[in-house]
Length: 46
Image (cartoon, rainbow, N blue to C red; front, side, top):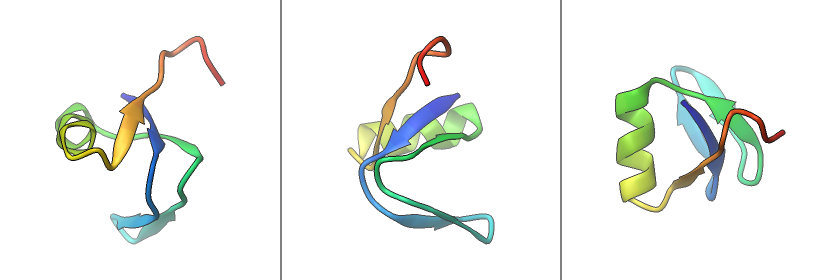
């Protein structure tokens, strides 16, 4: 699932920066969205 990060965090040894879009697994994305760490991005957006 594509998410846009609201905060900077480390994920599996990679640094995910705030404001950038990343693809993460669905369960992780759901937790981050619920915690307001990220927002969901539609697949057709950049």
